[in-house]
Length: 538
Ligand SMILES: [Zn+2]
Picture (tube, rainbow, N blue to C red):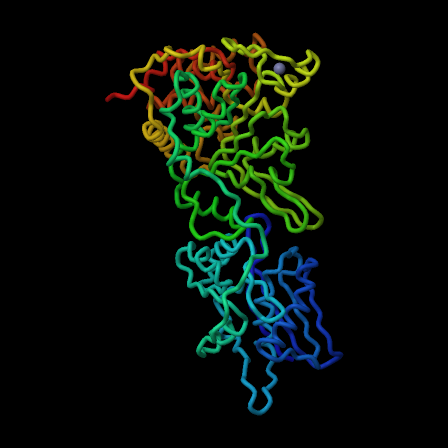
């Protein structure tokens, strides 16, 4: 009996687990047995790997009993990326001497130490790209692995992980030669990928193309989105068609600071699960799914292997849901978890995956399906039936809306022109540096606590460690006793008040910051005098 072990990584969401692929070759009834909770794709690996070995590095030990164990056995495993580890473990376990004159493809176990193998094999023995290389390599590094073999097109992606030696390979023959210390044979580039390409997103482009200073006469709204950006608060923009909701929403990524290296790796790891990447995602992503989009595309899941949805692809960025009331009811309902917990869990059969989803959610809604109801200064008239309009507006209440910290009502531009109380319109760069400074204050305040932004502070922690000053608390108590705030709503106003204070550079919110936060939640007019810090000193 001979035994060899090669390492691979199983993914559950973006979390990776190191898997020992143990191959045992012994006398006995010939056959191949794959054990350790493999899914269907891995079961098929048995035949794929046998063909690949016979065609590329002959030959498969056909007259022996080959047992492939994926350990730990209790962890569910899925995907086709185990092929390469299985193949090299078989070549290391098979001690059969080649026939006279035939090349020797045997591998020493020692060559497999400190190394992870990732890749799908074709029947001819070429290596095909797989999804999720970055989170797999991150997991390998976390378990002390320093070398990784990946399909050549994904070498760049694997190299994003500091301290990892990466071998980008085109074929099984190349991998075996490398492990034997021989000259690596030539191989043609590998065509095609097994998965969808990276979804396009416009975080970077938007920053180059648009600027908040282009938004005219909407200083209240810009104050509101700046507060939202500072504390990572979810926000609702409501108002008739043409009021500029999309114009503002699309510019929110431009006032968010660059991702930290840690955030960058987290976001890129999620993106790696849906396609191949050639560089780190360094700007906050922006996703704006259409209201017809399926639950799987927004929340994650889908047929075959679970994959993250746009709410996770927008991690640390912005998810914009325009015409929110038109989204499918099951989508709206399922948004509750990411809005509250900052992550999404997808359970399908034996597989359960959790993806991060800590982006800002920006909702927009018209006052009615046609979008013209109550449009001040508009020549357009609403032609919706009363019942239709009521049904639409009913969707603007309930558990999702309760999780929105800031609500702004926008009016068509015409009603606003000339009302610009600040000296000049802030540029995105100016707002971004204010947001950065506010976020730095939060980072210091919450250092070591497992959350970084005001929007993520648990209510009880907030009340105990960062209580509002008495006069601010009185405002909230009054609002609650008058039925204008729920207890959950009170916690949300408290968080927003902290963000207002952070923007103003105050350690503790003043009464006026609590007032501003209340106005931001209730869509009342903001006292722009109290937001005078929005006016830059220059
Ligand atoms: Zn209408």
